[in-house]
Image (cartoon, rainbow, N blue to C red; front, side):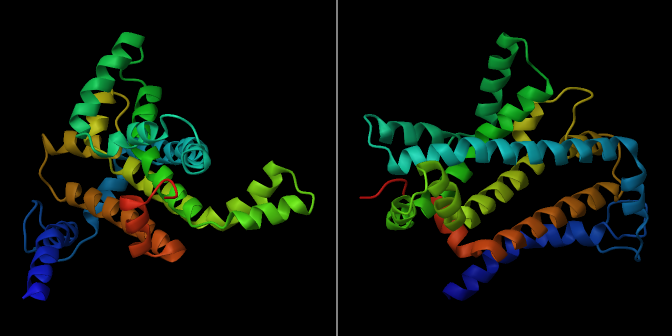
Length: 265
């Protein structure tokens, strides 16, 4: 019974994606299912359209910048939350994790008002900061979890052999926790690349990531080009998920990203 229910839930979640991917190869001129023959012309149309390529480039370098900044912010934050002994640590941990709990539409409205007050509304930097706010907690989670399971005696041994604290951290600690940090960075890129809700509030007419450009395209066209764009995005995310699986395993990543402890008991 439980297995049947689990299968039904997976089917409910995955079947829409399967339909979209199959529709991307439709030979017909409209978004229909089942496909009316096999064709790659809608992928060719996707790659031939300048607005989609500009949006793809923006989403790509925005995702890379988001992942890099999330690591630069998340790794020191994880070290402070795991190893630090200071008043208000639990409150700080709850604060940095709050973007995972708040609806992104609420976060988007708040950020739009905030950046409008600063005069940064609908700029690349506002978009970047917004994406970092919602992705950095994942890096903090995975880095905190791997740090929690790290044996401090290894770092102490390196320092006893003459290594400075900074060198011991980068050559010993970071070497051990690197899979978790890299997995968090990959996940941050995937979230940024595929983000729609937050981006909708922070984009401008000439600053449209791929999900927003796809949404705008669907307002006026209903051909399988939209399915081709969606299939491409699904493929990108799938490759990233496989990368995470290769680094640390999906079950371990899900456990650390979703329920990692940030401090020893």
